[in-house]
Image (cartoon, rainbow, N blue to C red; front, side):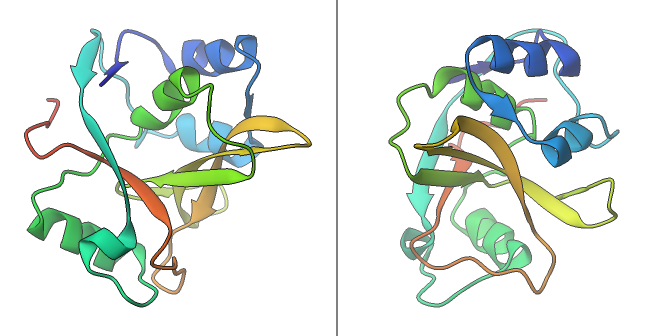
Amino acid sequence: MITIGGKTKDQLIAAIEVNGARVSKTSREMMHTDAFTTLPEPTHVRLVKLPLLVLGFRRYCNANDLLDRAKEDGLNPCPPEVAPCLRLVDRDQPCESGYRIGMRPIVGADGKLRLFKLDRNYWNGRWLRNELARPADLWRPTSEFIFLAPEEAPR
């Protein structure tokens, strides 16, 4: 369970950086689009993290297939705000690991669909990054995604 809401876009970016993580340029740009909103009041949400294999994908899939299958399985897409909030609390993410946020893609400043990714590496630490999420962009079955738990759907 994490808390989302109660912070502005700029407050989220500042909090991530104060806590020793970094925000990529394109993630910053995504956070400043109209598609990225924050809840005015703090709200607790339950999340689930799972590899695409659990959703039944044995081959690569794209964002549309992923969101359709997640919906069939009762999972809800995360509001984009989950990504920076999760970056704030996941300080023990193993090195050389990364996972994505199961969310409706946001059009970045470059005009391309993107979704958030949290990763950590030995050289530059913890990051809030993003990945392309166009129909031709695919993820392998072992890729991990975060979704809202079935009963969660913040308003």
